[in-house]
Image (cartoon, rainbow, N blue to C red; front, side, top):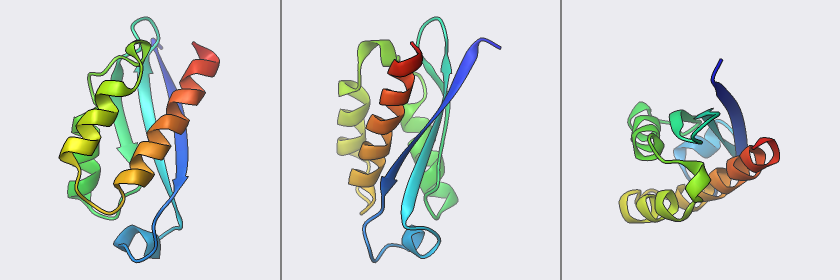
Length: 101
């Protein structure tokens, strides 16, 4: 395979739908080994729409260029209460990626 799989985790805020399922959020990324591009993403938000939105937001970014752009897009586009948790899980995923880059 030409990809790697990393997972990042963070704590969800209280009082949101996903928190009734789990207290933590998991974000998984499939990343192209050569270019560092996110080819697929998944997260444990409660709704299909939320999971799909995060997936589409992250796909195509190269982690070799850092997190500034995807974090900015997340901040600009995602208005749900889990935004900080998604950002924290993305940062955790990035740390996992850097350990194997």
